[in-house]
Amino acid sequence: MTNQFHGIIGYTITPFSADGEQLDLPALGQSIDRLIADGSHAIAPLGSTGEGAYLSDSEWQQVAQYSLERIAKRVPSIVSVSDLTTAGAVRRARFAQQHGADAVMVLPAAYWKLSEAEIVQHYRAIGAAIDLPIMLYNNPATSGTDMPVELILRIVREVDNVTMVKESTGDIQRMHKLQLLGEGQVPFYNGCNPLALEAFVAGATGWCTAAANLIPELNLRLYQAVQSGELEQAKALFYRQLPLLDFILKGGLPATIKAGLEMTGLPVGEPRRPVFGLDAEGRDKLKTLLDALRQG
Image (cartoon, rainbow, N blue to C red; front, side, top):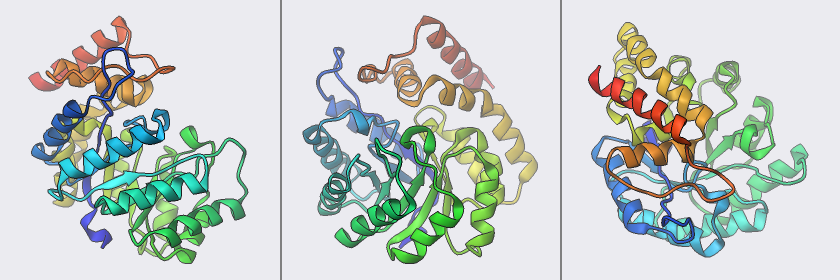
């Protein structure tokens, strides 16, 4: 089942009206169509880029259902169902399954610091509630929870449908350790844009990236070069896009991707408060980076 998840996994934004109050589902549909037309191998709605943490339950369900209907099985889908509570994540996981998701992604988000036993039980409960594959997501920068490789592999062993790992700490050694201790049997995915080349060389099955909204061709060519063993070409392609990848990370995914989409003819509003959109200096820098890549 997890073999269908590979390559470039494009993250969607969640478009809002100009005042940030209303969802703009038609714009979401256009962004999904773009990602698929531009070659993304899978689509991942409602992650950090999709501002899932800032949506009401009703909005989350609207975006999840609309996204899955728009994707329409043209490519595989991975819906982020993370929530502050286990019960909330279970509800979202069930909703995603009922509406045709191919997999879900789970970040153990919490206000209080979680013990390892609490993290394991969180995944057990979600795994027991659905029949879909689960991508375990480790991103301490957003969740406040950092799962060591040993804990990740324990969860993979104990929860049958936790079959994939997305690693976003920015530590390439985590990926090497996953490969080593997992004996090459646990598919892992890069979630840190500036590590894309190193992650693929380390054995990553795919790259979960918001950059596919802005530079899909470069993302795909990098993946294809690595797959073909053309590492010098991959290196050149990676360093060509690295300044933009760094900028996206430092500028914030929703802010940079939404500004970039507007520059390419698809207005999708600004991030929901308290997150600001890019300021004038940031927009100028982003435009310069995008123009340079188009001209190069």
